[in-house]
Image (cartoon, rainbow, N blue to C red; front, side):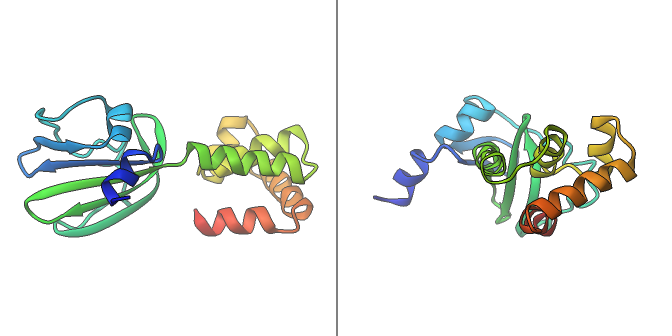
Length: 166
C-alpha cells in the first residue's frame, strides 16, 4: 500500500495543497468532505477558524508550523502547515473520533457525576478553564472543585494527560 492509498482511506487525515497565489491544486477525500471540492479555486488565507486572530498561531513564512486544538470549518483538529515557498500544504488530523473514544473511556472506567462528565468532555474538546466555566455558567471555584473531583476519581490519569496536551 502506498502512502497515497493509506491517506485516501484514512477518514481522520485531510490534506490540501495550494500554490502561493492561493489556487488549490490538490485535496484528498477527507479534505473534500470537510471543505468541499475546491481544486482549481482560489482560497484566500488559511481556512483554520480564527487562525488570523489567534496570537499563538503565528507561523513561519517557510518551513513547518504546528497548531493543536484548532477548528477547520467547525471540525476539531490538529493542523500542520508546510510552506516550501512554492506551495502551502495543510495537513489536518480530525479529533472528533479520538475525543469520542476518550469520553467513552471515561464513562466506562470511572464513576463521574453528570456534571463532571460535562466538564471532562469540554476539557477533551480543548476548552480553557475560563471557557468551560462560561459555557457551563459556573464560577471558577466551582469548576476547580469539579476538576479536583475528576482528578481524584481518575487518580490523576485524565487531567494530567489532557492538561499536559493542552
